[in-house]
Length: 472
View 1 (cartoon, one colour):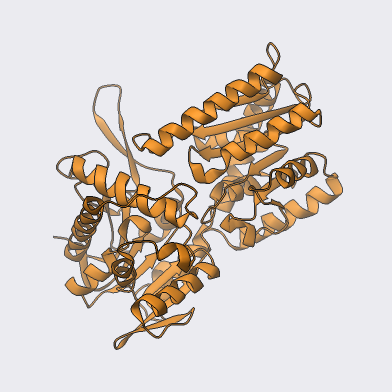
View 2 (cartoon, rainbow, N blue to C red):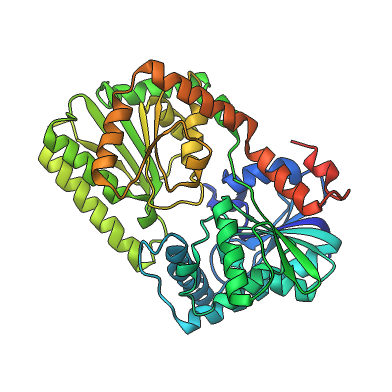
């Protein structure tokens, strides 16, 4: 079996499957943010990506993708139900997002989470060469570092959490809190999106496990686990180049014409998720229409809400509520040929998204809680003429990096309405310097800078990753 000096471990493989016209199954590199970050780095070294290929049953054998080996982990229908839909997305996800929805706790979910995490760790142990660096990703796999440490103590293990890490009073609700903390502490380096998350983690380790802990270093026996904030980013130059393409600019002009060439276009692009603040945003917009501060003839709201986790009951209920509210608002305020809200649930390719970003005078990104929110960063990168207003929730990780956005508390309905109006009617002399400053930050702190920063810290000054982190 071929072994690798760098192994990335994530819930999903960096490829999407699709059926070709002749019925054959094709495998292609997907456009996800993590893939975009790591692809230019991984192709310069013997690297393996361990993950689930989608679907249930035996793990398929897949070819290398851009010289990166794909190591598949099999999930059964029971694993998918109890590990992914259950413990990961009905226990951890809501708890880590401030318990916007009530987390559920079931013992069989925990048993599945342990079982699947061990399967991922064993697959990783098989493909990692002696002394390799392993980078484990996100909340689905929090036990993998600990299990991997037992199986392969020679490895350098990193763990990165892409979602928020909750304050101690919320995390303490978890029946298996100690086991989750110990699992993460199997890593040599634990990365979070924000410094506050690292602080929360250190507090919990000290309280629950009674280990010496600061926000930067935790002593685990004779080992020292380092902790830090590494805010994830996007391919800034790539998005800017895409938005600047003549065909994308032409598509943007057609889209604006199709919308009736309004004075103002407000855009929101979300997964259908209760953490994204979609219902609060719709309510604020409805009240602005009712008060006459916004008029359908002058202003258009485009809400993209791509379905997500549709087998989870909470998500089914949310989609029904959102669609009823959109129908009510359009029925009450829309006109023939002039809906108040253009509501779209189909996924968009990146070129179409870039065109939407180009026509949006206001980008409304108002999650109730978000680890980072890369849509906000994509919008900024796409505004190649330094125009456009970003309305951004204080509770998105991106707010710490983009203070020039129009920041709002999405729980405060009046504040959200005022924020929308401020962004809609902002003076260009105010908008342009804000956008220019945000774009400058993203060009300095893009996705490759994030990956290099984390991998360099994991390598801790060694030589193994030097040639990787010098690329891209």
